Image 1 (cartoon, rainbow, N blue to C red):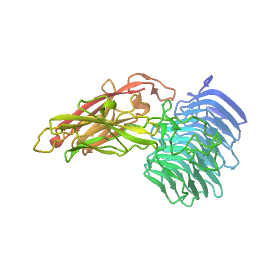
Image 2 (image 1 turned 90 degrees about the vertical axis):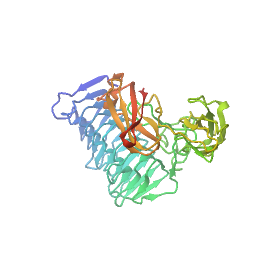
Image 3 (image 1 turned 120 degrees about the vertical axis):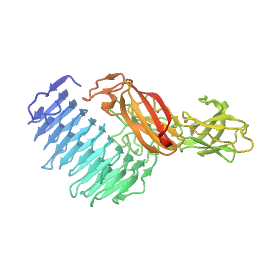
Length: 521
């Protein structure tokens, strides 16, 4: 892929590679210096084919102007304005962008279709590692945007603004982690156009799933929403086949260039065969919702994985019984929960420790010798319809004081739990529990004792909490085991972090501190 290297670090403030006639270019790397060269590759009134390339450290990665071109299997990274910029004033262009990886960091927009034309954007991975506003921003006469992963942008994953009378199709995409830090934002936003089709998309962890501006005619159906604060805004034309459910991805982590994410669907995902019935998958069946469905998707075997561990297990006393409760799992094939009990901490949860199997998320235990002083420890596992068992939940602890004349007294604990997953790449969750209200700080350090990040710094009530640690490229460089990665701004293969909690209680008195180790691998 990198057999030819074009070093434009000392180029004059023009494009490093400029095309004025039709051409084909394959297997090369274009390097800028991050400040001078405006574009790594630029063409004007010339049709080009670009394959198997890497473009890095420029303002615009690939700039296509008044051209019908093909850009395929390219790695575009560290472009401080846009990764791909496409403009077609004459409105006659039909460029195709396929199977590219576009990695942004503190840029303006990853992909910008600035005016006119009919581009096709398929099977691309578009990831932001911090600070970029928009994934794909389109002001086109027509657009087909299909089977893409677009994730972690601040305001909009896909912004569609078509010309009057034309159609833009956003089909079988996965748009995720769009917090919406300003007005008029969402996983997919539409406006100023007349016909927009949004089908078979997964919209996950967005402030708004679909945001409709102005008078756009939007047909939205057969989409799946998950952890979206507001499904739709602006009254798009909504069908009756949208789904709100956990999509059940194989490995649902925030992607990075070398991350271990996997957004294929598990065997019992509610997105399987739930897409538009007029759209068929590669195997001829009804289309799946998501980036691997439809005719441009993949044929693959659905994995039947165990459920995730139950979360937020708590134990308290209620009328002489131990009251256990936990959050409900979201897997579609969830069958039962197993409740385990022992009298020693960190116990092994084998079949001899099972005290109940139930479908509810609440259980009352009548422990033996409950009026005799002692400790009881509980864990929960989830079981699916194929009897796959999850790892255990965190351990809940009850201390019974053994006072026959009065109900048992529960002694709750502060607890900093082990992060999950561990090792992790690129992100992990740190759980902790507060016995009482207090001012909480959760911090991450490298092995030199240098503070990498403050995750929590505020007053919190008693209860169970989780905080996400998703280190930026700069923060990842501070961990042990750093190597330079080819994104241009550094990454690591493995590294060790320490995470620490400090709790300040009433009277400004420290009441709890703890520290644990986690590994990025």
